[in-house]
Image (cartoon, rainbow, N blue to C red; front, side):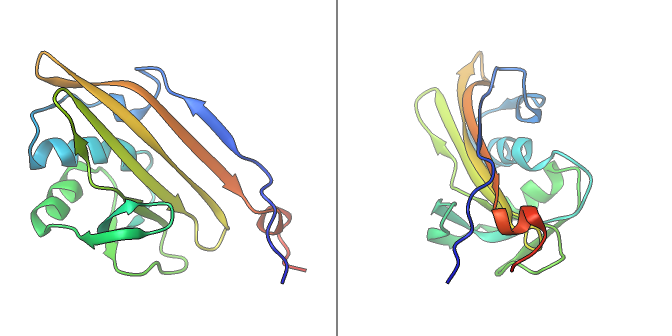
Length: 159
Protein backbone atom coordinates (compact mmCIF):
# COMPACT_ATOMS: atom_id res chain seq x y z
CA UNK A 1 0.00 0.00 0.00
CA UNK A 2 1.33 3.41 -0.93
CA UNK A 3 0.85 6.19 1.64
CA UNK A 4 0.33 9.77 0.45
CA UNK A 5 3.13 12.12 1.37
CA UNK A 6 2.13 15.58 2.54
CA UNK A 7 3.30 18.11 -0.02
CA UNK A 8 2.54 21.20 1.91
CA UNK A 9 1.58 21.91 5.49
CA UNK A 10 1.14 25.54 6.41
CA UNK A 11 0.62 26.95 9.86
CA UNK A 12 -0.71 30.44 10.30
CA UNK A 13 -0.90 32.45 13.48
CA UNK A 14 -3.90 34.68 13.11
CA UNK A 15 -3.90 38.31 14.07
CA UNK A 16 -7.14 39.70 15.42
CA UNK A 17 -8.28 41.13 12.09
CA UNK A 18 -6.79 38.53 9.78
CA UNK A 19 -9.74 36.24 9.09
CA UNK A 20 -13.38 36.34 8.23
CA UNK A 21 -13.98 34.81 11.67
CA UNK A 22 -13.27 38.19 13.22
CA UNK A 23 -15.48 40.17 10.79
CA UNK A 24 -18.72 39.51 12.67
CA UNK A 25 -19.59 41.00 16.03
CA UNK A 26 -20.95 38.18 18.17
CA UNK A 27 -22.45 38.70 21.64
CA UNK A 28 -23.58 36.38 24.42
CA UNK A 29 -23.08 32.67 25.07
CA UNK A 30 -26.14 30.96 23.67
CA UNK A 31 -27.20 29.29 20.48
CA UNK A 32 -26.81 32.38 18.30
CA UNK A 33 -23.33 33.11 19.68
CA UNK A 34 -22.23 29.56 18.89
CA UNK A 35 -23.74 29.79 15.40
CA UNK A 36 -22.07 33.17 14.80
CA UNK A 37 -18.63 31.94 15.82
CA UNK A 38 -18.99 28.76 13.71
CA UNK A 39 -20.22 30.88 10.78
CA UNK A 40 -17.00 32.88 10.97
CA UNK A 41 -15.13 29.70 10.06
CA UNK A 42 -17.57 28.38 7.43
CA UNK A 43 -18.48 31.66 5.76
CA UNK A 44 -15.45 32.12 3.52
CA UNK A 45 -16.53 31.83 -0.10
CA UNK A 46 -19.67 31.30 -2.13
CA UNK A 47 -19.34 27.67 -3.23
CA UNK A 48 -21.67 25.10 -1.64
CA UNK A 49 -20.28 23.07 1.25
CA UNK A 50 -21.35 19.98 3.15
CA UNK A 51 -21.22 19.96 6.95
CA UNK A 52 -21.22 16.85 9.14
CA UNK A 53 -24.49 16.59 11.09
CA UNK A 54 -22.65 15.83 14.34
CA UNK A 55 -20.26 17.80 16.57
CA UNK A 56 -17.01 15.93 17.21
CA UNK A 57 -14.62 16.30 20.13
CA UNK A 58 -11.85 15.47 17.66
CA UNK A 59 -12.96 16.95 14.31
CA UNK A 60 -9.76 15.87 12.51
CA UNK A 61 -10.53 12.18 13.04
CA UNK A 62 -14.33 12.42 13.50
CA UNK A 63 -14.09 10.92 16.98
CA UNK A 64 -16.27 11.47 20.07
CA UNK A 65 -19.19 12.73 17.98
CA UNK A 66 -22.76 13.44 18.99
CA UNK A 67 -25.71 14.68 16.93
CA UNK A 68 -25.96 18.42 16.47
CA UNK A 69 -29.09 20.01 17.93
CA UNK A 70 -31.57 20.86 15.15
CA UNK A 71 -31.88 24.43 16.48
CA UNK A 72 -28.09 24.91 16.25
CA UNK A 73 -28.07 23.43 12.74
CA UNK A 74 -30.75 25.93 11.66
CA UNK A 75 -28.93 28.84 13.37
CA UNK A 76 -25.64 28.01 11.62
CA UNK A 77 -27.43 27.66 8.27
CA UNK A 78 -28.98 31.12 8.73
CA UNK A 79 -25.68 32.68 9.87
CA UNK A 80 -23.59 31.36 6.96
CA UNK A 81 -23.89 33.19 3.64
CA UNK A 82 -23.32 30.17 1.39
CA UNK A 83 -25.28 27.00 0.58
CA UNK A 84 -24.89 24.26 3.23
CA UNK A 85 -25.93 20.63 2.95
CA UNK A 86 -25.98 18.80 6.30
CA UNK A 87 -24.76 15.23 5.76
CA UNK A 88 -24.08 12.11 7.81
CA UNK A 89 -21.37 10.95 5.38
CA UNK A 90 -19.33 13.01 2.91
CA UNK A 91 -20.44 12.86 -0.71
CA UNK A 92 -18.00 13.13 -3.59
CA UNK A 93 -18.37 16.22 -5.76
CA UNK A 94 -20.81 17.83 -3.30
CA UNK A 95 -18.40 20.47 -1.99
CA UNK A 96 -15.80 20.59 0.73
CA UNK A 97 -16.74 18.46 3.76
CA UNK A 98 -16.54 20.28 7.13
CA UNK A 99 -16.56 18.83 10.66
CA UNK A 100 -17.16 21.13 13.64
CA UNK A 101 -16.32 20.59 17.31
CA UNK A 102 -18.59 21.69 20.15
CA UNK A 103 -17.86 25.28 21.07
CA UNK A 104 -16.05 25.55 24.38
CA UNK A 105 -17.04 28.49 26.55
CA UNK A 106 -14.92 29.47 29.56
CA UNK A 107 -15.53 32.40 31.93
CA UNK A 108 -14.64 35.03 29.33
CA UNK A 109 -13.15 32.78 26.65
CA UNK A 110 -14.42 30.62 23.82
CA UNK A 111 -12.66 28.18 21.48
CA UNK A 112 -13.81 27.08 18.02
CA UNK A 113 -12.27 24.00 16.34
CA UNK A 114 -12.92 22.49 12.93
CA UNK A 115 -11.54 20.29 10.16
CA UNK A 116 -12.31 20.03 6.45
CA UNK A 117 -11.39 17.89 3.49
CA UNK A 118 -11.92 18.21 -0.22
CA UNK A 119 -13.29 14.85 -1.32
CA UNK A 120 -12.11 14.61 -4.92
CA UNK A 121 -8.99 16.77 -4.44
CA UNK A 122 -7.40 15.01 -1.48
CA UNK A 123 -6.61 18.27 0.32
CA UNK A 124 -7.45 18.80 4.00
CA UNK A 125 -7.20 21.38 6.75
CA UNK A 126 -8.51 22.62 10.04
CA UNK A 127 -7.70 24.77 12.99
CA UNK A 128 -8.63 26.39 16.27
CA UNK A 129 -9.61 29.95 17.10
CA UNK A 130 -9.60 31.45 20.59
CA UNK A 131 -11.85 34.34 21.54
CA UNK A 132 -12.00 36.60 24.56
CA UNK A 133 -15.16 38.36 25.67
CA UNK A 134 -14.62 42.10 25.93
CA UNK A 135 -17.58 44.35 26.86
CA UNK A 136 -19.98 41.56 25.95
CA UNK A 137 -18.60 40.94 22.45
CA UNK A 138 -16.33 38.07 21.38
CA UNK A 139 -12.96 39.21 20.00
CA UNK A 140 -10.58 36.89 18.18
CA UNK A 141 -7.30 36.78 20.14
CA UNK A 142 -5.37 33.89 18.59
CA UNK A 143 -5.64 30.95 16.29
CA UNK A 144 -3.91 28.39 14.18
CA UNK A 145 -4.87 26.88 10.84
CA UNK A 146 -3.30 24.11 8.80
CA UNK A 147 -3.75 22.95 5.21
CA UNK A 148 -2.21 20.14 3.22
CA UNK A 149 -2.54 18.02 0.11
CA UNK A 150 -1.24 14.55 -0.57
CA UNK A 151 1.58 14.18 -3.10
CA UNK A 152 -0.63 11.82 -5.09
CA UNK A 153 -3.45 14.36 -5.43
CA UNK A 154 -1.01 17.22 -6.02
CA UNK A 155 0.56 15.33 -8.91
CA UNK A 156 -2.87 14.50 -10.30
CA UNK A 157 -2.17 10.78 -10.58
CA UNK A 158 -2.46 7.82 -8.29
CA UNK A 159 0.22 5.71 -9.95
